[in-house]
Length: 273
Ligand code: GDP
Ligand code: MG
Image: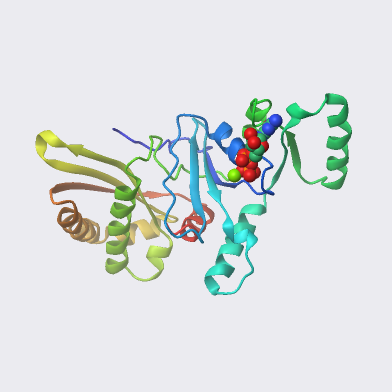
C-alpha cells in the first residue's frame, strides 16, 4: 500500500464539506452518491458530540472531506460547544443550496421553484439533484469543488482502513514536535502520515510523515542546526512508535511549506485530528 498525497498540483483544492439540512431530505443518500464506492468512510470517533469525518472523496483535482456537524443543532453552553458551533458556522460560510429528489417532480413544477429560490438566495449556487438516481450530482460535485480553498490534500488517496494507527503516528510526531520547539511552531504545523506500511520481510514498519508548515522560517526552526532538531524529533518519535507497535519502525519525516494552510489546519483542530 503506497498512499501518496496528490499534493504536487498548485491548483489542487481541498476542504471540508458539511451536508446540512432537516432529517429525511436525503443527506445520507447524497453523501453515498457523492462519495461513491471507492471511498474511505472513516470510523466515527466515540465522542459523538464532536464533528466527525464521515467520508472522503479524492479526485485528481480535489479532495472533499465530508463532515458531520452535530454542533449546529446545539445551544452553545460550554466552551467546547461554542467551538463546535463556530466550526459548524465556518463550514456554512460557503453553502451551496441543493434541491434534492427532483426525480419526484415534473420539470414544469421544478422550474418555478428553482426561480423562486434564485430570487430568495441570489448569492448562492442552487443545484437541483436526485441523490437517488444520481442525476446532476456530477454538476453538484463541480460546484462544491469550485468553492473549496486551494490546498494540498489532507488525506492519503487510498482507503483509510488503518486510520487509527495513522492517527496515532501523527499524534506521536506532533507531540515530539511540541516538545522540541517553541509554542508557536506546533500551531503552525500539521502532520500527515503519507505512508504506513508493514514490511514483513524486514520485520519493520515503514512510516512516512509530512510536517506541513506555513513559512520557510518555520521549516528552518524545525530542521534546526544541520538537521539536529529534526533528527531528535524523529528519534524520539520512533522510539515511542517502536514501543507501541512492538517492532522496528523506520520513520521518515519530511517538511513541506504549504501557504494558506491555516484554514484547513484550524478545521482539523476542530475535528480533533
Ligand atoms: P437524511 O435524513 O437527510 O440523511 O435522508 P436519507 O438520505 O436517509 O433519505 C431519506 C429518504 O429519502 C430515504 O428513504 C431515501 O431513499 C429518500 N431519498 C433520498 N434522496 C432521494 C432522491 O433523490 N429521490 C427520491 N425519490 N428519494 C430520495
Ligand atoms: Mg441521514
